[in-house]
Image (cartoon, rainbow, N blue to C red; front, side, top):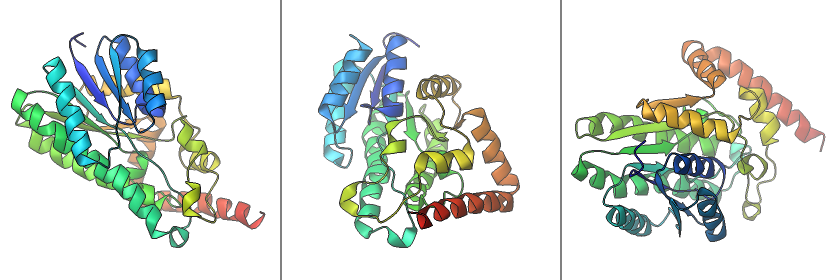
Length: 274
């Protein structure tokens, strides 16, 4: 990557966003790390070195997103990569998840991505180049029982991204959607906010391991994602076993339903033992 290139990252204070920021900075890309947690954003910015800056940003605020992306693009005279990565996860039995929790995850995971797209896309169209990368999940490509709110939002992100990719291609703009299986990030151990009083959720780490294998190292995820972005891959599914699971699910959806159902049954059994 050219040292003069720039990248704007939401949810950059931890997890995949942090790993992407650090990997991009190593490549000489100028990175803007944004997060609701100011200290986390600052910490990652310092980890990235002189090629990075930090900004506090709530992706639910469309105007704040627009201002932040505009300012970054003006400051550097270009905008090469926009990673709409901020997101949360909510798990549990669908009928036990309160409406407020559904509204929260939609606001962050769908509206937050949309706000980033709507702010960045006109800039990229005007300059005639650039790449939007929206973080979804393997849960956006198939069933994700006991994670219905998360699956809802990630399917929406996949739909937006694959549709915009076709539109944007004729205008010089690239669009990709990142769909990883379980990645070793803090979200695995902090799924549901206590404020929602969701009575039960699966052991996320154990459940996702049963569905798609053990969590993948986040640093490897970032490097593989950037390699796929370099190749302009539209739907980036990783690691390799996740790509296999995706293909199997497309060819034999009934098999995936049976396997997923067995994992759900095992988690419900653990609940009965509480």
